[in-house]
Image (cartoon, rainbow, N blue to C red; front, side):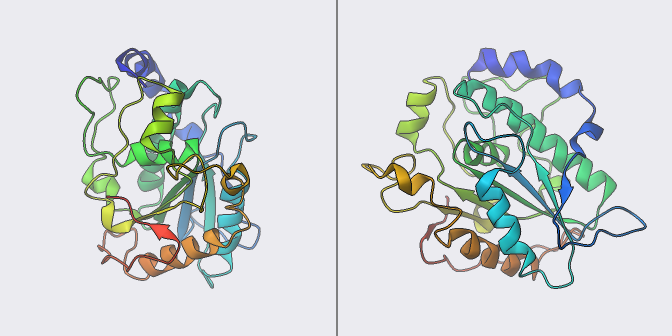
Length: 253
């Protein structure tokens, strides 16, 4: 996501944010019949090579959340981006996720948003939270950084799985900007890295660990984290207080 890539994406901002509303309602969720709005919307970016949608980890998180939300409704908005080995195109996902957040807030101001991602998708979601465009990089016209406070306050929690380490980011794209969770989001962000995962754990060599998030219990931990945040924050902008770090997770800072 070098300056040339950011600049090339300026035209993408002109795409109607209405197109972002292509997500699916979780099977057990009941969307508001009058407004079409849910109590909670999960905006999730899938991992590399996964088919369009929320991906296996996003689907597992959806199930984990659905079982914990009680009578609150849940809608899933998959981030639309290539999720290919052309990591520079991850910027497409950053733009799309921001558009989804903006359109969700505009249409459903009382909906609490959960932002998340797996692997390359975790990097996409992480970049969305950035405080500023890193030195040497140029954001496309129409994309403001950081995320406007009136939008950021609607995001109750951020859950990231298998986030690429700085070394892996450099291998994927030597022009990739550093990934730092923005200060507004630190207290409501949790990152999960399975032991031995070579994508997020320095020195990790267990490739199977990177594929295990959907079954290793970490989506359940993430759902507990999210529900804790939802108990103290909603779409009306009530700020949540930081929740203690969960076992098996590393909070970003």
